[in-house]
Image (cartoon, rainbow over all chains, first blue to last red):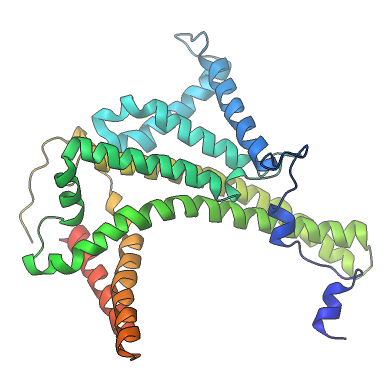
Length: 263
Length: 72
């Protein structure tokens, strides 16, 4: 028996493929209406609802929901907006708060029971956000530093010997204009894709060896699968938070860099 | 060490080593540009040496740029 017949054997364990996990069937026959689309809209509604319930009638001494959401606001202000935007931070808080909480809820959809799909594991979603931030970055840079000044500040960092600029300027251009927005989107996508694949794999191990084909030898493997799924779910929640933080922090960094050029 | 220009206003933001986040994209762009030029030269001249030379030169330039931006 070779490897191919083993793969086709319905009695052996088979890891879930990316097609099974990420190519989801359209809902109700509408070709663009898939699970991640529904979850993306649902996440936006959840974020609006959370902030509405917290700040619809704000109290001077916050209680309950307002208290919790104010902690989130302080976190975004002190850790994401202020370090990069400085005195402009307050003007950008609405944007930064929306970005951070939308991406966070998108990501957390990966571990919410019944939802269990991180929206950003489809590259299209982070590309839209990163693309919007990229356009804002260039617009603000040209507006605040002038069309020539913006590219001059970007491509010719001060303090280097004259001749070397010929070699370094194209690198700075490529790094800032193409690689930075690309990695901004792909970092979020790849983390969510990998996390979802790992959790799906280990829960599949648990399901297969404990429910589908329960055998004395397979049962311990199934138990390990369930335990690792639990541990990875906790770890994945940490990654989901971290990636939402990083995505918003990089947005803040790019916008801050356009507002105040490097000295 | 070059003399440090006094920062006009610490409240201006950017008091975090945010340049650190550009290290990876700088390294990548060095390899892509100079490796790419080497690759094109190889195709044009029908050689094999320029692509690895270009990639190494690109990495060296990128490391130099990162060093000057962050260390100098």
